Image (tube, rainbow, N blue to C red; front, side, top):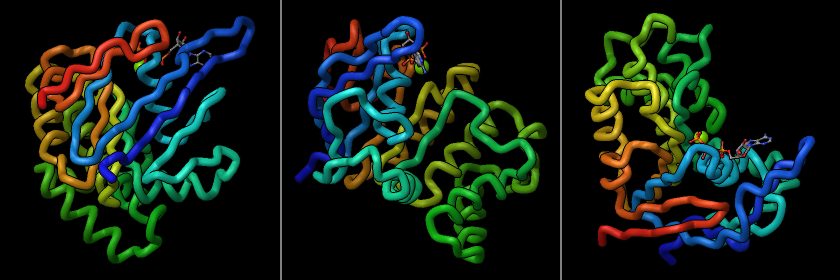
Length: 227
Ligand SMILES: Nc1ncnc2c1ncn2[C@@H]1O[C@H](COP(=O)(O)OP(=O)(O)OP(=O)(O)O)[C@@H](O)[C@H]1O
Ligand SMILES: [Mg+2]
C-alpha cells in the first residue's frame, strides 16, 4: 500500500459573519516516497489544506485517512499523538519559541513524542549539526538569521523522524540563496517511507516536486507528475 494520506470528499468552509467555502469535495491520495508541491493564488486554500493534513483543523465534511486508518477528529489526544510522532510541520516564520534556545526548541518536539531527555538532547544536537548550525546551538531565535531560524525549524520538524513533512511557504520570508538552501535540505529528506508536501508561491521550487498540485476555486486544478 503506497498511499500514506487519503482525502475523501473533503470540504472546508469557514462560518464567521459570512460563510466562505474554501475547499470543495477534494479527493486525493498522497503516496509515500514522493514530494508534492501545493500552489495556487493567495486565498486558494493551501494553508487550510495543510492545517487539515496536520490534524490541526478539521474538515467540514469528508474524511482523512492516514496509513489507511480513518481519522476521528473528536479523538483529540490520539490525533495529538499521531501529529507529534508522525508529522513534522514547518511554517513560513515564527516557527520557534522565542524564550528557548535553538537546541531547546528542537528538544521540546522530541520530548513531546518520547519524553526521554538524554535521547532528546543527543538527537537534537545531531540534527542541528547536520543542518550546519552546530555553533548556533545555544542561540535564541532573536540571535539567528531568517535562514538559520528555518534550518532550526526544519530540525525541529524532523527530530522525531516523521513520515509526513508539511511545509507552508517555508521560504516565504527568505532571499533566493537561503530559500535554495532550505529547499535543498527539504529535498534531501525524501525517503521511500515518507511524504513531503510543501506550499509555495515560487514556481521554480514548485516545479522541483515529484507532483505539482494546484488549488483553484476550492478544487485541485492540475496535477503534473514529473514521473
Ligand atoms: N480561521 C478562518 N476563518 C475564516 N476564514 C478563514 C480562516 N482561515 C482562512 N480563511 C479564509 O480561507 C481562505 C483560504 O485561506 P488560506 O490561508 O488557506 O489561503 P492560502 O492559499 O494559504 O493563501 P496564501 O497564499 O496567502 O497563504 C481565505 O479566503 C481566508 O480568508
Ligand atoms: Mg497560506
